[in-house]
Length: 635
Ligand code: WTA
Image (tube, rainbow, N blue to C red; front, top):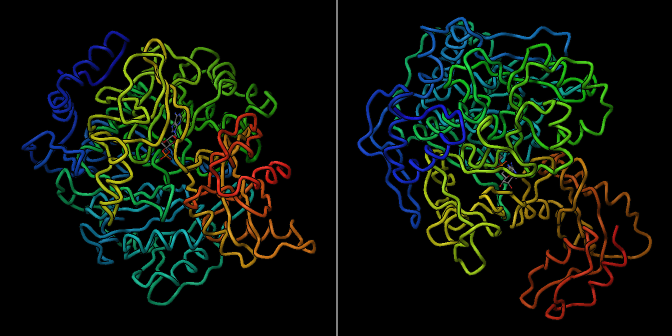
């Protein structure tokens, strides 16, 4: 018997040891006992990090929606699969049972087929957090189409880049979305994006806000009438374990966003197994992850992981601040949430408000609290533990990435003793390594280094869409035979890991990964800008905020700097999205550069963080004099 459900620390260590000693047997047992396969694999694992090539369950055939929906119908057809909580608390929540989900996914799948979508085609999904989003994701998986969900906060330009990068034929969207007291014209954003996307022949439009939008003849179709006319039966496309399931874009430190490709079999096994253990999900629990399905957390832990376990998963359309700061806790009370999974940035924002917003509500249903997306600081951890968990619900600080597909380092609640700011121990099957700058592994405890993983796990992304070379260079070339995460970490005296943050040019703002290069490119498009450099600096709610150093083409006293700042942020909003706006913009005459012309971000980062005690050796700079000028004018 595989240890699908780990219940105490000894058991964790046993399972972990087995997973390392004999990974193939370990994963084979889990795959065999807990999932429905149409055909068994020939080989559990084939891998070579130098190519890199990773294959799990090769030769196996399956459809992930059979595992997430069909197989639950006999025993829990009337159980709520998706519990939709709307933006407006006075609008009724919607309970979508497994039976209903089955029908709605099949109808949607049939609509996609009618629109000519086939196995392997890419489908762009640009939808708010309404049931159609989860349903369309599953509908793609039903017919073997590859979904590419784009977070509906991205701008038209960012959307167009993502549509074109993987040649999507169709875009699924809505007339608009609710965001607290505001509405957003999503269809308008899609219309602008599609001016640059000749490959898109069709858009299907869900009605959400009933706004008066324009529909382009021959291209735009209302979704609902098509769904109503479609059959509720759609045979699942039988997929190879290694067929792509989805593409999800994540920021790189340079260049355009990376379309991480996840495949079917391994991703399913890993997300389901982690979900079960990390949240200790039990049959009648109500589980809520506050993420958006536009991010990996939503893919793995709102849709696939929970549904593969036959769970009830909550989808929340709104924001934590509407109608007031008590909204999360109102929902916890209303739906008797048992597991609650959110981001440190949300916790920090909520912790700044009066405790009345928390104390008004009964939170006694909570059993497990989770966090993800960035390091959680000690203060936020304690606030969460004291006020939300009342010191009785363990906090799982889960470290993972878009690229890893599922949770990698995490406590197992009720088994692993937690420690504030520590993600603690590797999940079974995960073999972390800390590396030094010379590429050697640092053994032993009480050490820190660059975090790598030395052995494949089933949910690792297999490539970057259309650019395998970049995949190799980004993740497998810094350290030989290691997957490099881009994060730094330390290991304490008992082997617990604490993630210390990015060691590359990715900055995490409110839990969103932002690459510096695309933001700098956007700024440089402003006609008055000659050059720019972005760094992160600590922010008490967002974790990090962005600080821009900008060189203008012509300086001169007459410049209206405040207006320029607004214009620069406007361009960033148009090119990337409001999440990438700069908090501070300092105009400068120069940027510190090495003799080879590389900007020394390390120095700029220290200045922005007001940590100028030890700037390191600046004498090798091409222009050491600018450092003083920048320090004198720091904001
Ligand atoms: C960071 C999110 C510290 C980390 C699932 C990682 C974390 C990046 C944690 C991936 C955590 C995520 N503690 N840092 N618990 N979780 N990170 O791709 O820097 O959006 O590399 O995936 O977020 O972000 P992504």
